[in-house]
Image (cartoon, rainbow, N blue to C red):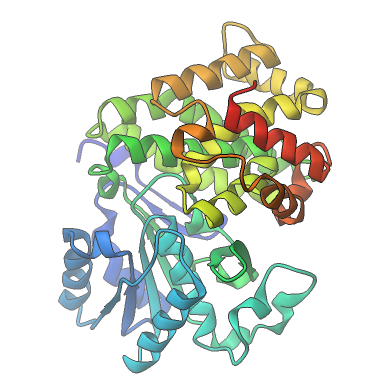
Length: 389
């Protein structure tokens, strides 16, 4: 196979089978984890495509019976998780194959957690020591198969679930929620439309960039973030320009996984704002991060100028300074046809107070280089709506 030299088996941060065509190893992965009757969790769009039929056929060929649950919203909700948990029990399933973009992966991880719990979902929100409430032995094993290159949820220790009543996103956390095994097969991303390629790719960049600039001491994660950004710089424009560029798709998919691995170091104001905006406006998470990125960079400039200058040097930018890096971000956004402002995707200032209040309370805010006040989040949001850079 032309790209066979790119194949690899990694055991950090979990077991990862990376390479073209490795989706065919799905049944082998089930056997490795002792899964005999997996529930495939995906979204309604993917459920209609060949991915799911192929997954069922691969399992069936090895004598593994699978079921499918696809009632997953673009921003998965508590109701989605409850419905999936019921289907899991009704079908006597013993594991989850989370197949799709970030929504399907997050929903699949949350379902695998909840099948063995007798507490409500929000009792496991990432606050204080809530994770200690989890009955770990009753959790179901998860195999994650991403079909987009952005969220990195396949290596995440949280599931992002929307609470429609409170109009917010909640992070459901447990170290064991991370999938036991991941298949990174870039062939599954070849059909991704250019707009989603751009939005999810910029989401991956936001993870790596915020992790690189975050306040927590984790040099290993910072190094991973650095190389993730370089891969995105080199290969995301190629994947956007030609969706059939297998090498570019492969490298961006790996970069997305690296970005999510790195954000153990922390995230920041991009995500602190993107989470409430996604919950209130049901907007695409990656697109929100892409639009917010330059505004957050400017807001943090006084604290991140030195590390971003080092980053610009590593990326071999013509102007290896903070301004040079900001110019590259703006140029990349233009190249990918990312809107300049939140107003261009239908977000106005009517909810500014609520957004600012939710942003300062979001767990991602703790990793921001500057501890922004509610008023500063209000101003930052206002700038992103009006285009004041």
